[in-house]
Image 1 (cartoon, rainbow, N blue to C red):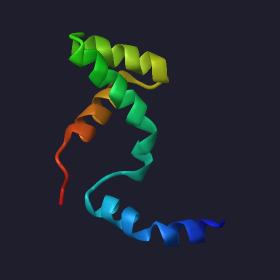
Image 2 (cartoon, helix red, strand yellow):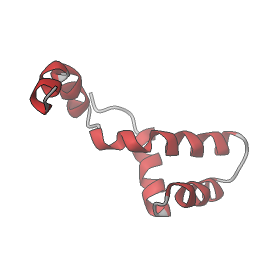
Image 3 (tube, rainbow, N blue to C red):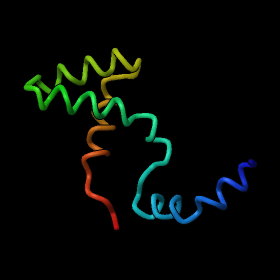
Image 4 (cartoon, rainbow, N blue to C red):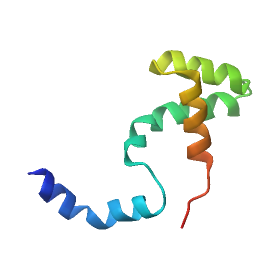
Amino acid sequence: MTIYELLKVNRKSIEALRDAGIRVGDIRYIDLYMDVMKMTDAGDKKTYAVAVAADRYNVSERLVYDIVKRFDAPLQI
């Protein structure tokens, strides 16, 4: 399968994501976000959860805060 064929097959889904303001590259952060949410739901402080996730996923704490904010934002439909 080529890139063109994959884009053609998934065109409507990709357009819907784009139109909603979703960055397709954010898919790589789904597990990070789920880990932060599990920790905060379990009663951990947000700053602690962010620090642990940043260390675990080898990203900056600022990026983790940005991801959480972006993922928690309502869709722009």
